[in-house]
Image (cartoon, rainbow, N blue to C red; front, side, top):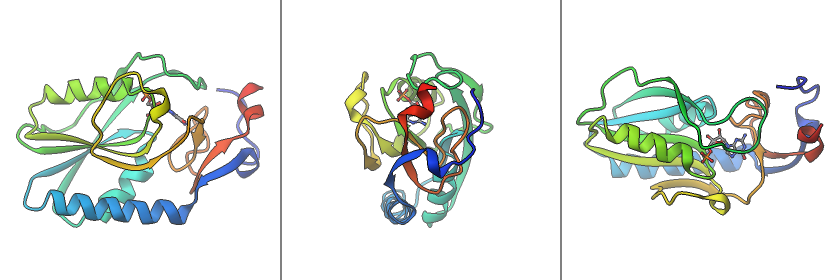
Length: 187
Ligand code: 5GP
C-alpha cells in the first residue's frame, strides 16, 4: 500500500473536475433520474468504496422515494493501477431487489470488467429494471461494451483520484477529481 501521503494536494498534478463542476453535474443527473423514475420503485445500489461520495450526493439530488443498498467488490489489490478482471464480492446486497427498479451507482468505468460482472450478478436477482449511472467514464480502455444510461463526465485515459477514488486507499477525501503526479505511483 506504500507510505501515506504527507500532502494530498501537492501530489495532484492537475485538477480535472473541481468541486463546483461535480456539484452541478450531480444535480443535473439527479433531475434526470427523478424524471425518468417518477412513480417507480427505485433502489440505488452503490459499489463501495469509491462511489461513496457520489452516492451520498446523488441520492440527495433525487427527489423521489427510494431505498439504497451497498455492495463492495474488489477488482484489483492494493496500489495497482491496472485492472486484472478478477472480481470478488466482499459485501453483498442486504435486501432483495426482486421486482424493483435498480440503478447501479458507480464511480468510474474503465475496462468495464467490474461492471460487466456486477451486471450479470444483479440481473440474476430479478430486478424489474437495471440501469447504470457512473460519475466518470474512461472509454479509451473499454474491453466490454456496456450500455451506460447516465454518465457524469467522460475523461481521458489518465489515473485519477479524489471524490471517492483512491490510490493505495488514500486521496478518497479530496473534494475534486485530479490526476496524480506520476512520481507518486512510480516510487
Ligand atoms: P474496470 O473494471 O471498469 O476496469 O474498473 C473499475 C474500477 O477500477 C473502479 O471502480 C475503480 O475502483 C478502479 N479504477 C479504474 N480507473 C481508475 C482511476 O483512474 N482511478 C482510480 N482511483 N481507480 C480506478
